[in-house]
Image (cartoon, rainbow, N blue to C red; front, side, top):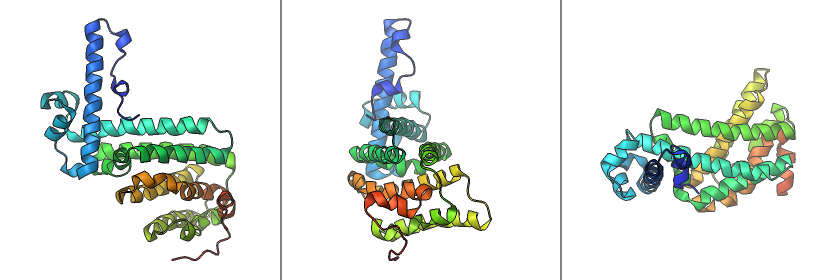
Length: 271
């Protein structure tokens, strides 16, 4: 799913002017795919800060000259691996969303596909949520663009679901005592609520897309916390928690809690 050579082709072999050219395109695509996978595996095992180019090349079964033919630095290789894995993950999510007509069902299906994809390859999960941020500016910007795509998907579903006022939306943090056992998670969601509440205090509710960005950031943070603890394979168990977090800013606490059988009235114990 994540390291297929075809996703690294820099041209269509079928359109090549010779069999030799077509073979070169396929060979280089395989080499880039192996380099990206080697980067992901080493970064997941040791952290990107410890990764050295010669070890990436050796793990991929190519020479240093081949590495530098494709990448000017280890950060460039990390970025290529991220872009490839991020695109594959997003395609999986969009495919799942496209098979559902109900707006809330789209959110649930998209989250389920995301969690399943990340759990299937913990190294990729670590790359997408953690290691990419250890890279340079372009690496961090790439992750922001990826999260922006999350926000776009949430915004699309949010428009179909209908919005709620900020006073209702900030109750997103009320249920975290039931849905999460981590104080860090609760603080993350409370921070999102604080930002929404601040906009209300200024007599201007946040633009719909701003709300989606806050929500996508909260979702990414919750996932990153689990991945950082080495629990990537357990991510599918977070579906209910993330489904609630995704819907609460649009439906309000009570409506978002209904599919989970929770009381969204706000009387939950805080810690």
